[in-house]
Image (cartoon, rainbow, N blue to C red; front, side, top):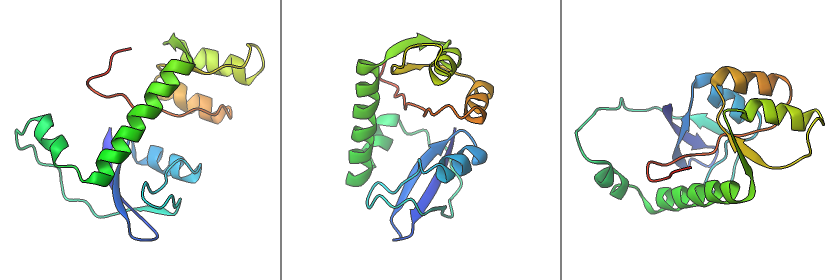
Length: 141
């Protein structure tokens, strides 16, 4: 995963995690990237300082987040939990099941699971709508 510093048209700065530069571009074009402060979809990458490992624990890094980042993180956790509560877990069969639902071969329902990058690209090429669900170190399936 790559962390990008992002900025919206109203100059709100925030961070986003993406699998690659192409993943950021694709998500932005599809309208999946928006400013957590104002909701704008006009997002650009901002200049970033290189990441340097300091040996600090994750707990100390988490405490360094601003209030807006803490709120955004809480919203992401809540969204991921809601998806898991209201969808069927299909494990590594996600791409296969999503494609069946998309093409009407299975009953429509919410699902979640795992997919390789190649499977995700193939789903996107087929027009199957999906999105990554964030996972956090303290979560278990």
